[in-house]
Length: 330
Ligand code: A2P
Image 1 (tube, rainbow, N blue to C red):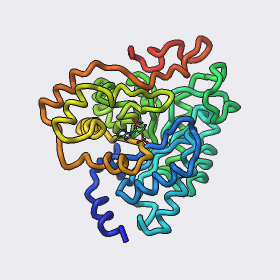
Image 2 (cartoon, rainbow, N blue to C red):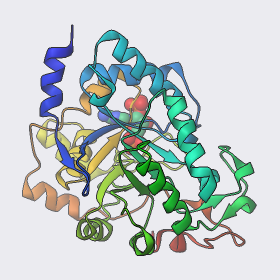
Image 3 (cartoon, protein in one colour):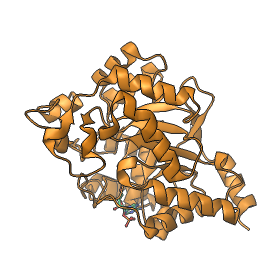
Image 4 (cartoon, rainbow, N blue to C red):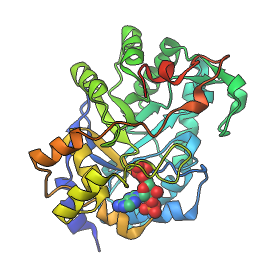
């Protein structure tokens, strides 16, 4: 009942090519990191609603416990004929730190695929540039004494193997700084095609975006609205007076201005909502644009990061300060 209209919409949905692979990534995706991390029926229903409205890119992670609800929503969407095949979707998931060890990567991806009920991912990411003792499993918060340095070369070799086996079409990273990407690129045979990081008008990441562009690494933005309601989020983005003023003048919402701004930077944007109206509202960013004056105003917004990564900092662990984790002042 929905497919013709929505398949047309899907065909028109903006996408960009990913690295040297033949694939593309839809520039707007649906996030599933809802804190505290638990699977829920609401999540499944929200994802199904998003598929009905035309979202085709979904971002999960082992640690979010969102792979199960996402898999159920995909199965139901297929049953209902909302999508013709699994290939209509772009599905990302992430390797959690406790699986960040050479021999645990492949079993972790197989487990992820089982949770999702899928045969392959479109994108598999290293979630953070740090490992945890395997016994820490997916428990959050974890104990800082379980933090370990990640052996990028060994873990990346296992990621490459996952791609070679066809279990994921693309491999990439998340929360990597320029310095850590450089280190990974030194030994990688298959370079990462994506770096997924926090980006919003309040944390614009100009230097990292430029570096990634030069290296042919596509950037995906998480927490474009500041991840209100999570342990790492805040209201600062949606309460920003400059963004509110632009939204009011344009007859758009502050959230739409944020999403449009991120989209105009050429990066893909992940947004999450469990509210039907807002899921729809967040799609409406493609047929209007920000003026040069509005972009200039956004450029002037004082910068502050939401996701500080403090949980990864400890005197005994690989990162003793947030500056060491992000390789910059935050
Ligand atoms: P809700 O699920 O009630 O819509 P981010 O994508 O940066 O992680 O932000 C997610 C948070 O922003 C959630 O709390 C979500 O709440 C809220 N949110 C999502 N879309 C909108 C919107 N269009 N307007 C206001 N808040 C939004």
